[in-house]
Image (cartoon, rainbow, N blue to C red; front, side, top):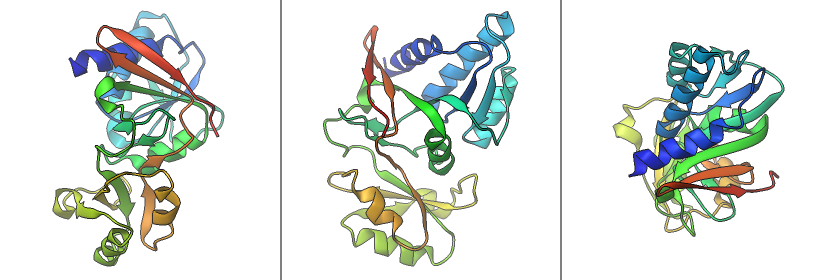
Length: 222
């Protein structure tokens, strides 16, 4: 069911893509459906001259395999299309399950609009289901992890430090009783922390697959 909802959300978001656009290309299972659909539109000639900024090496490879032109540095991104691991009624997001949170946040921050695609299981009244990903430097990383835990969580290195982001850093998955969006600034103040998977006030529209329908939630980007 969730896979069908992801496809439904991705197909609805694709309706907002037109020829000549500069777009952000997120990372994750829902974005995969978006890229497949976009590739079909490009191949069929329905749209052309699309340029995307990929948020991970994996996304870049997938986009190019579908005939989508990609660049790693571009001004004037119109819409960033991405997924989320969890989101709340205010449009706050937890992202980073795929380990691409740093590049995802850079692209989102530099986009005019951010469109999030997800199935209904990602919706929570309060952010608490998905562990909060935090990217940290591979230097005194154990001390960084302990300093994060002092804020009030339990944490583990993803895959026991075997996982490295595209930036060469570790990901720490942190379990809070409630992932308050205000935690973003507190965690980022800790030396060694590169980025936090809380995306607050960034999403402008969320496409949520729900059964056979797609609910669209609009927000004002701060």
